Image (tube, rainbow, N blue to C red; front, side, top):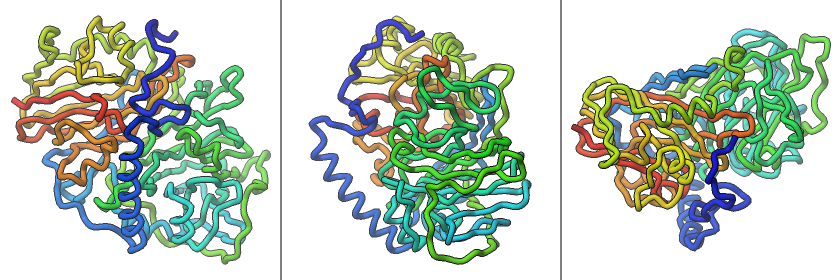
Length: 493
């Protein structure tokens, strides 16, 4: 059940209109100018084949892990900014652009039928690039399918190709968001188009894949990845995420972006399973293009991407990467182990060098109902609840290793939590803040809204080491959220 006290109409401060993430506030004119300037700069960088390198590096080390009370997937991160020059969870724009044009290893590529065929069921690695149509055409020399109205996927040098994959094959997907203005992901769905606008709202777990929610007309996904933030062409990097799934013996599957409106607008492609009695033929939505058939010789993206392994969740009945709403609400009120919590000072003090913190992104009414506290005066809308406090100040020893689990308990907005050297006030487009001299210790994906009807909330875990600086801040990078006060302070001791 939804918590009592949730306003039926959310604040317009964060752009909560019928199209999530697009602000209609009084700042629209200023924001438009900023976006246009940034887009022109990014377009120039893209046309030149890449952007400059990022000069600053983080003092932290990073890793990520998808562990939790009800997780059925795990994630790991292998590289830090000290070795790559880019934030963890990202890949170089120039490397991504070069790889985008290359066929996949062990696959037969047909431009004429816009398809990629895998004959072996082992060792399949697919790198998919979410990108604007114009840049996709410029990079590949091809045109998108007629059904594509917005962003597209480029895979193996083709645009939204049909993928022929043997049933039972284990497939490693790496998703790279090359769009500098939009959030994107890629999931494998058991049902095809037309897709709902808010796809993530219609998922419930039922055995292998997702079961249909009554009245929704939508089933679900083999793995639930988080949404990747826009690419930073000025910084020279793009967000990336990797996970693995086993292809079931369905006749047809679909890969699709779940960000609101994207799947509905044609950001998808078909997967035809082979080697099974129910195997089907290529979708009628495929586009015929002139080209040749070739065999690939290159490998997938090598980066500091997170990686995940998909398994079914028979013990919890929850989708991978989620926890139950009831468990989250109980944990939300629990002080972190080994900490001293002060409600009067709205602070939590740690003395250990090994720390576990669970932060809940939540609506302010629900935060007050659950904690009995009021948000800080600077918080104008959504907040974080940590250890039963709202946006508390965290006192953490320098050099401490902090394992952070972020849970999104908001039912209609996307959220993340990152630790940054940037202090408030924050810009509307927080991700652009890195161009202004700041740094983030870890770049996590953005979590989709919670599904109260199905009883689960998405979460993501990662680990950072607190550097030897005086003050840090934790905040949400989704457009407008930090600007409206969704942040808290970390004082290093």
